Length: 472
Ligand SMILES: Cc1cc2nc3c(=O)[nH]c(=O)nc-3n(C[C@H](O)[C@H](O)[C@H](O)COP(=O)(O)OP(=O)(O)OC[C@H]3O[C@@H](n4cnc5c(N)ncnc54)[C@H](O)[C@@H]3O)c2cc1C
Image 1 (cartoon, rainbow, N blue to C red):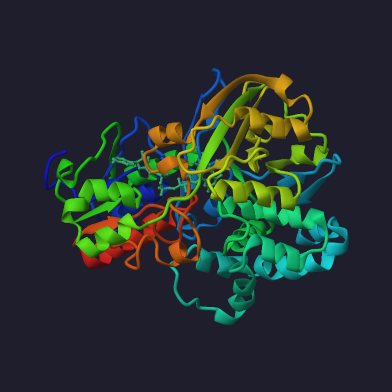
Image 2 (image 1 turned 90 degrees about the horizontal axis):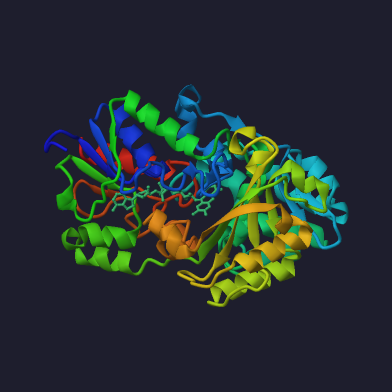
């Protein structure tokens, strides 16, 4: 790392770090990305966690946000090996009676399958799906007055509510409530906290409008395509190098940090103005994830066969049961029957496992930093809707919140969204200054800035735009 050699240095090679680096490199800057781990990609990595030949997504697995990202859409990622696979159904949600509610690509067919809630579902979803192009630009943008305020007013009216409030006031059937709540549970917010319903609307509408695709070969392919494109623009990446202080890195016009507030305080605390430092110290982290990956003898034997056509299965039973489980997590208790996000990419991508074998990926929410082993509870939940599941397991890999944080220092206590995503922290993320660290040339560019968590690269793009504007 020769000093004076770079215009921009990016700390961290997650999707946002790589997106920031690409944005700078496209503007002609000489860029260096420094990554602590031995491999690039942060939350978009895949590897053989269990047995040889079984490729597991370590963090992200399904990508409605990546496919909707206005920034990613400007990049030639398919030329660098990224290929999307679209499973027939984005989401399935099994019930104890052996049936499942399914989010299909068609809004009409999904509504049709919800019986008495047909009209209510159409009323909720048709608008956002029709307006998805505009809506995704606003939602994956910075929090500001949108260009289409009237079009979005109705969406916002529903989106700022809590899951419980919206589901009870809008739907009358248990199936529709549970389907919606399972999708909204990706917010990692308690069902009575706002704007948890917004996540259900956004991810549901994305499921209809663009699907919940998986990358062929695993989410690592997203990071690999981003890094290959960055290198084609002259950017450099070094791995296995942890930045502990700003003095570890060569001088540059701008330093962009793909880290969360707590790490920024460690790396640059002594250089930050005290008001800003206090703002970062007040930033709140969310419950963590407890994650399991399995090498399986065959597909998960779901009783409801529709589940075999979905990239993602939400396991948690009724809306009431899920609400109780998420309430427990938010009040620091261990959910006995956790809400689980399960993905089964090998059903649609044969490159993930040896012939005839399969991979399974699942996580549940637990209190931040929780040390309780959730393996038994999680496998019991799947067994409940897929009897015989345990017999399919050839090997398992366990990620406790602490192990997740070891794998990626941004996953503080297992928090995988870069901090709580309630109304306050979505608008002032991580402070009212957003990307600027209040020191000339220093920026935050991770999912702890707007628009928040998920693989979409927009935080990195906006932070880099600010750097280009202010440090030209
Ligand atoms: C279990 C799990 C499941 C998920 N599922 C999905 C999903 O299905 N779809 C989806 O869209 N999103 C999903 N996510 C969220 C997604 O992975 C993140 O929101 C996204 O990766 C955030 O990108 P980022 O660039 O901000 O940070 P990260 O991807 O976390 O990258 C940060 C990088 O910075 C590096 N770093 C940190 N500190 C330093 C340092 N001091 N020096 C050098 N390097 C450093 C880290 O090693 C890491 O590589 C999931 C996350 C988890 C944990």
